[in-house]
Image 1 (cartoon, helix red, strand yellow):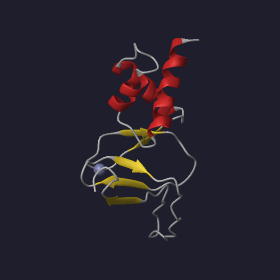
Image 2 (cartoon, protein in one colour):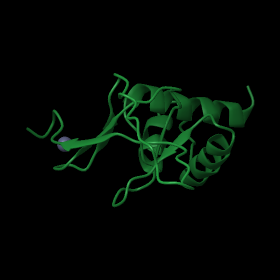
Image 3 (cartoon, protein in one colour):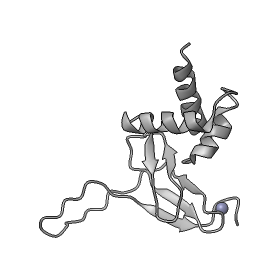
Image 4 (cartoon, protein in one colour):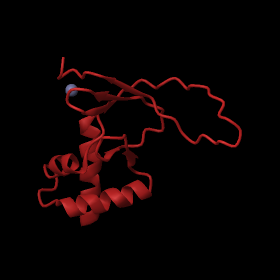
Length: 122
Ligand SMILES: [Zn+2]
């Protein structure tokens, strides 16, 4: 199999396994279990390409490092733990919040973020 295909697959598997958005370094650590020679530069290059072609989604919150997750096509809420700062997503879709923006404003997307303490940080 072509090398870049293996690398991409390892990245996709890492994200599928984790069940939460991951930092590139976390993707690297999980991906190396599948492709031992995987390096951070390669991970960054693949992430950039995969985000551009829509096979990954970048999740960005102020004060958080850039995180990446698999596109779900659903509107899933995220959760940020106030103790460990880890970002999770919940499987249940968030309710669509109807909102009429002021004139000449166009809303393209919305996010639902919950804050609290994760199951590792009671
Ligand atoms: Zn936590």
